Length: 376
Image 1 (tube, helix red, strand yellow):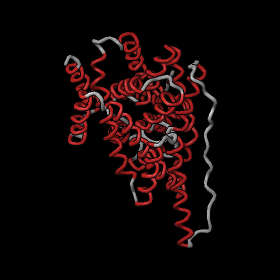
Image 2 (cartoon, rainbow, N blue to C red):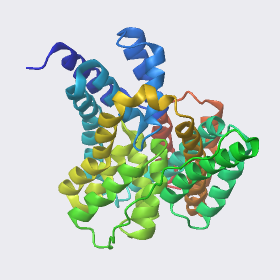
Image 3 (tube, rainbow, N blue to C red):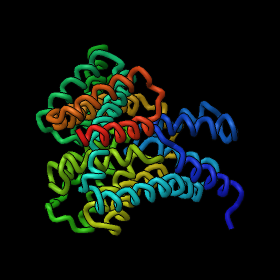
């Protein structure tokens, strides 16, 4: 039988798993209110330390925060219970949408809804790019790094390498700055690399799992960066999805509560049915459980590292550049449909002038407007 702290963790994150709309920033705000203000499980200072730590490792920030909180409250068992209780409700809701989409998505009665949803998704991502960019652009060298990575991303540089290059370039700037100031002899940067398995376009269950495992293991930044990773892997490299199908999947991930990464559940079902949904979900979230398990005891020491802080600054600016590049590409793909252009422009106005409006209501409104315009 579960002990009291474990039951408390399960109850809290099951609740958030079905009510946490609005993306990672909104999720973390809700957690702060629940964990710090209402339940007094930890101090606000320690909560902020954990938020900072999630940015030092790949994976979805808000989902990893649930794991950190569970670990703090109920140990290793709490880590896994918190993560699963937050992920599973959203994954099940997304799976229902995936089933309905595969069964009826090509029918005229359903397809008009996605005319508006796709345009709204681009506006939401653009808002996230703006907010993250404000936080990430701390000085002019980072601005130059971001500009270079934006240009190279538009020219075809892999999103994963662009984000990691941002971190390496930021470390390089710190190194040369210290040489110039004669305040340090030098340092040995961490060498980062990723496995580039020879994946082919035939979507077996094993390959599907490995693709999402790789994405989960290298996904730095906000959950919105997932769009760029998925576009690069599933559309460009493997051809398992079209741009249109990817936007539909992202829209469902936005429309449902909980982590945006449950988009993987939707895509897995699109490609390989029920088994594909299960393996894609397992693959994309499994690295986060392992990373948090290893990281949590080291949080206080990692926060004091100047090199890790500088690397993180570069990773953040790289993630923003990648997000902006993929937003521009997706927007260009929709520009041929006047209905989507109109909905997109109105949505951009709304998200910037009413920033607290939940993305759930935006997408619902876009779906209804798209449905109405679908008969024009």
